[in-house]
Image (cartoon, rainbow, N blue to C red):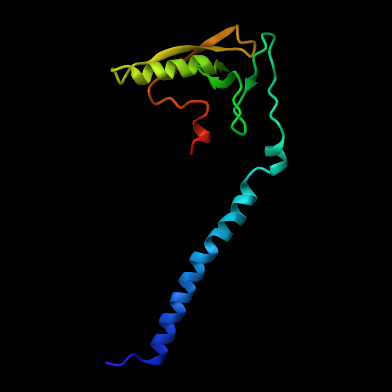
Length: 135
């Protein structure tokens, strides 16, 4: 059974189209990423967080920089800040506890890092302040 020249042309054309798609995909992806990524002038600037009376920085992690106090929501819904060192300690304790249901409560503060506004529950699957940068 002979293959018609028309069929060969269709197969070669299909291979060229598929190969072209694979070759063009990174360039198309780069164009899309650039349109949704933050501009480099924002990312290139040093991050400055507000500082409370105790010299602690507070806010949300930005561009792989993490302040001393990060914003969160306390049990009951009130917004405040948890101290990163307390969060890390509670996460480490929870992960090393043989009880997979262990829960550790840490204080949620106002921006001053002193006034308590509630508690935040930490379990072994609670994400850390830097987890979003490890992807």
